[in-house]
Length: 119
Image 1 (spheres, one colour):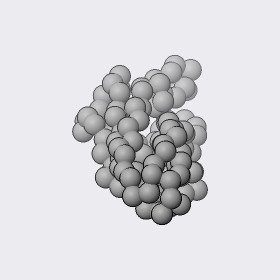
Image 2: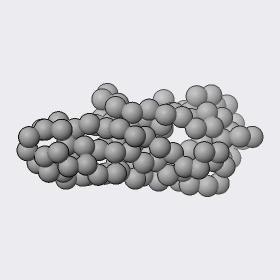
Image 3: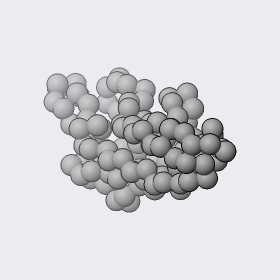
């Protein structure tokens, strides 16, 4: 079967370094039979003070959908998912722009958006 991803949303609009970010999206089975999809969420920080991961898994879920059925997927990005070890070996969330990528795999991204953590 086949699946369609749509309606990516992130809350709050202006996240802080110590708060959760709620990511939601609509997942629809566009095929003719029931099936399971495993949506995956990845995070990429645009600019950082040290070299780290290119993109990091922020969450995943297994969703069973009947033909033509839709469900809202909801995943939470905790501050720990955004934290890095800086040059002083302190673990922290650095302010800046982050990309959120949602899809069937790291090579099959269907939705993307971004948020910014202000200094």
